[in-house]
Length: 88
Image 1 (cartoon, one colour):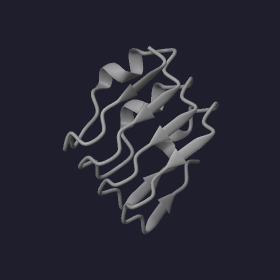
Image 2 (spheres, rainbow, N blue to C red):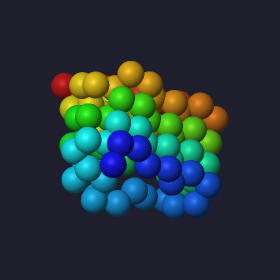
Image 3 (tube, one colour):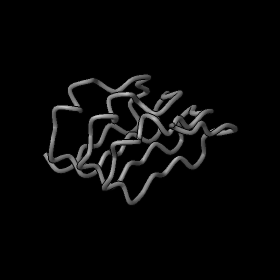
């Protein structure tokens, strides 16, 4: 699986099984009810493009993306982001 589309489904969490998709490059989870960057993305080092636009995200926790070394695009537009936390 190179990409997955979960947009517009009113989901509030992504399944941990996404972490098992070692070749996943594109994740489109826009127009849902996600309130944070899903922790399952922590193990997704192959991801290049993540679309989390039009959700309920208020805080970006960089820790959840720290292992996404190939990430080129992170779309969090149309969320209510007001805080970004740094990983140490």
